[in-house]
Amino acid sequence: MKRPNPKAAAPKTYADPLTGVLRPGQSVELLKELHILTRDGKLNQDSRRKLKQVYHLCNFIEPLLNEVLDRQATLTLADHGAGKSYLGFILYDLFLKDRPGVHIYGIETRDELVAKSRALAARLGFERMSFLNTTVAEATRSERLPERIDIVTALHACNTATDDAIQFALAKRARHIVLVPCCQAEVAAVLRRHKNESFGKTPLSELWRHPIHTREFGSHLTNVLRCLQLEAHGYQLTVTELVGWEHSMKNELIIASHSGAPRGNARERLRQILQQLNLMELEGRFLS
Image 1: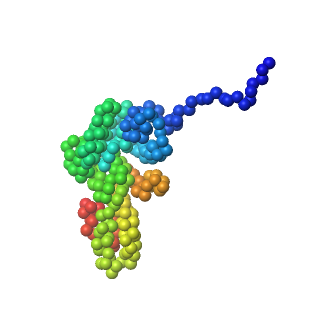
Image 2: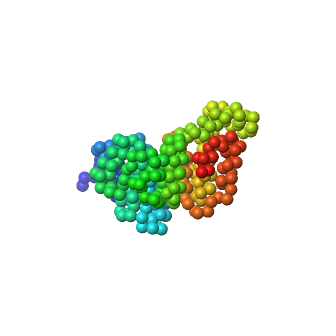
Image 3: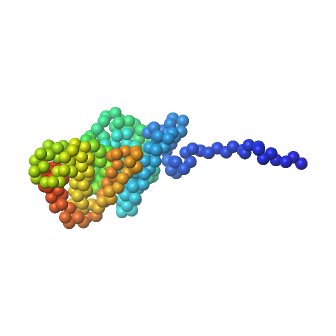
């Protein structure tokens, strides 16, 4: 009797490289269009990292979607500074395409990106996605948007566009707000402009005496003021990091959920900070 050869090669099995990466029912065609997958359906290391980051953000947003849809049969979401609408498309594909009462609005100022997003939504049959070519500030007054928006997102909306998104969310009585602020220059510019005057007013001016500290302190302070502003309007906050620092320095994630109970001293604390740091000219932005 012939004995089996222990050195004989084991039969080859095919392992799909996308197993464990794609979610059930996820559109491969969408991921190709977003250049997360290559045209032949492969996933390189860079796109794997990008998809992981998108999933990580979706993990924060999914409970907010569920909270709204547990309350009501409809949901509206506005994504400001949508860019290529990665977030809106993936949220729709993973969680919302089978929910008939849901509509996502992508708001972007670049004509070519709005046109591409509209064309992609049409090709994929994502009928409850709309794309508006408008600024965040103009969107607040746009008749193309409903009076109420349940969830507002603004990811890497530069400088004051994040503040415009907050004003939009407040005007639209948003239940949830998801912000990843970026390139906050306004507060730092005011600190810089009044630096000499502040030296005689408060020893805290040492926090922004050097230019690099002015920039970094101004960025941090901007988000502190935004958090107080949201708390003054009855939102409870979670402030955390979005992804590891090795991926991005613009990494702060602010999630605000409306509770209807403003933090009692938030508005006064905000005003005191503006006064003590010689920033009273920004009252209109943060206290209006």
